[in-house]
Image 1 (spheres, helix red, strand yellow):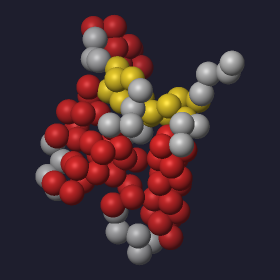
Image 2 (image 1 turned 135 degrees about the vertical axis):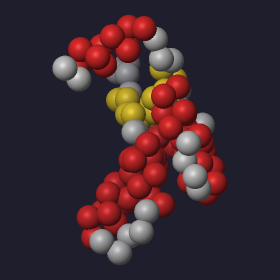
Image 3 (image 1 turned 180 degrees about the vertical axis):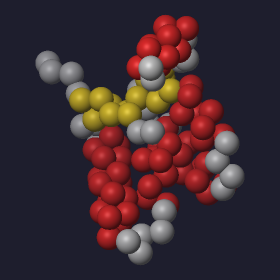
Length: 95
């Protein structure tokens, strides 16, 4: 059996469905994210979360956005914890 594809949203992507959709680009991006969330809910994709994403979400000043973010993240199958290996990789990539 083939593994399902995995998807990871950064905080901006996770919050896109709640942005002002008066610009067509934002409206299209929001619809795309909602479509991906639908695939996750249907079991067609696996959502990956992370401790860094959860930390960023907690810093969001709007309670509606925090609530929406946690609702989506509750669908995740796996959460990546921040580790020294990840910190070293980030430092090497940002050079």
